[in-house]
Image (cartoon, rainbow, N blue to C red; front, side, top):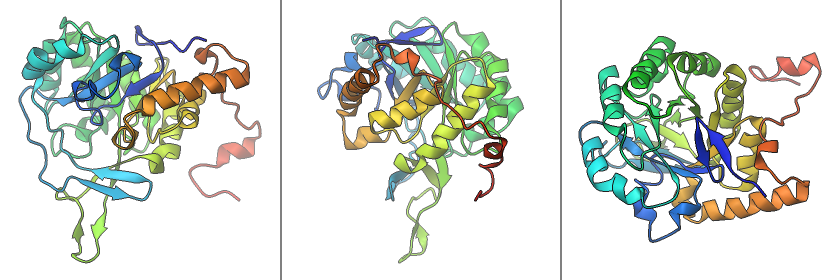
Length: 317
């Protein structure tokens, strides 16, 4: 049974990738699970310099979800390349670095530092974080800025470039095409949804930052829809992200057209989630009489009537 997939010229032994911000730098899990069993892992977001992140509290649970405003705390790319990348390189898995910046030039410089570093196989360009005042969604919400950031990173590195798209936009397809035109090799879709949770006793936000990014099962139908729309709009692969905690969840993205998926919030609940989903994917393929996970990708069958096209933006009876 073949579970291997290829995305952006990278071969993943299976389609399950640990998402950025939910798996540390990977090395934190070395004593908990076998990292070589992962299809890949994406590091926490990294700027040129170390970053403290936002004040606490930075996490609040919500129904079927998690609201966070960590603020991209990190050790900086130079310390990461010196101290962390060599340790991750010992494990037989695809290693992608999540690249951040306050300016186009910083994105390009972080990418340049990563270029040629042993054990770094690709770059996920974080143009979609809703929890920082500069950079982040300011770039990912504007097609021109999305294009410019991706193009600058593309010029700075030989590594595969994978922009991470924001759901907090009107038209995800427009941003997907802008990233593709800028030179993206693949897309990650989606980042967290902007949310607000309020403590009714104090009448203040539950997060010190105020708003935060919503993740977890609550966002999955939105994420599947946006990943599907992005995949329909571009000719490059789309990695699906959003609320995956079971094989069925992962399969929704695969069927919608994503050759690989990232598992995020579920890592906090169950560090063994990748092994469980991997085993369940194999069982599902066996029940379906399939021997290659790639046969599932993009197999969605849509309703044929024109009336179905009218449903989605407004309530339909």
